[in-house]
Image (cartoon, rainbow, N blue to C red; front, top):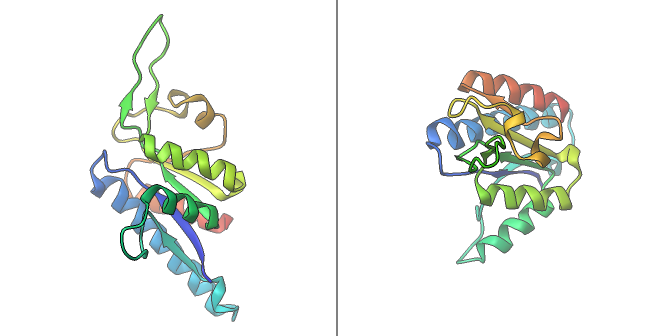
Amino acid sequence: MARTIFFSWQSDRPANVTRTVIKDAIVRAIEDLNADVLEAERPSDERVEIDHDTKGLPGTPDIASAILEKIEAAAIFLADVTPIGLSDEYSGKRRKHLPNPNVLIELGFAKKALTTGCIVQVWNTFFTGCSPDDLPFDMRGKRGPSHFRSRQTLLRRIAKLRRRL
């Protein structure tokens, strides 16, 4: 059975600068990884595939349960944590940039189901220009997320992450 990279994406920002760009970069990295597996003459079950939402499931599965099962079985969990909104300002507290809530639920589950070395967070800074300090506490307390402003930047960062795999 192939190892999967589960991609948790959001649809609150334009797909052509978030979901599609990230997915294309993942697919390119997977193609490179799978080529390395073939060159090394390893078993075919070492190939890597992208997975997301209910991809490949027949009928009308329970979406939330299916996603959690796929995350638990994944080798890598990659989340698009591009902020989609801002928290309210109160008592002089700094506003926080907030990712999609579904992505955050999936990220929280992945943190429980997988090791932290198997979790990758990416975000497009084009929309907010914010820094990791502007994110919620439990997201900025780790290395990452890997951020990008353009397709080329993302491709370079994915290539760097690929080498870590």
